Length: 231
Image (cartoon, rainbow, N blue to C red; front, side, top):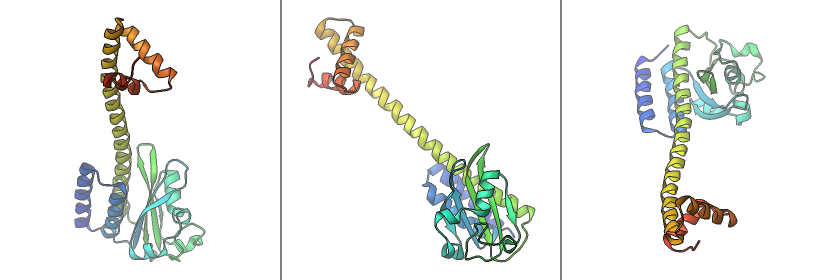
């Protein structure tokens, strides 16, 4: 069964979180909670990892899922790991036929049904979404399609957050480089006037002094501009 009202609310929350830039863990916990409600399952968890590295459980929802959560090296195996590595959903109607916990499902669930969905954008895998029912039951195409939407939302936010952080670092570096250039140009002008040399020669003097003292160009330039350093 699918709770369409809860699904609509999930989309609305997701749009807001993308625009506002909430912390990744907050969004993933909210999505895990919504997955339990939307798909009427007993538990959900989001596991994250890059490439072949071990998956780490970063969000858990559902009363019993919290109660049986194992250390992260045990909780992110089974359907999660298989979905993550294959890039395809792994749906199991009856876990008892697999010999739990050898398949890596939570030990508190001796049976039931599970599905693992990869968190992917294009060819980039960032983890998996795991859904669990306490009783065996097949997963309908509509349920799998809806679960896929929730998994894509989780993947989208993770990748967006990482890219946003990378962009922020790049912007900070560019801003710092711009600020440094202004100070360096000021220092060049001071040296050129002081020694009656060309700006190019002034830069050479500035650079040589920085190298000889193992200092940064901006640090030396700032000292010249402030009058604290004679070069």
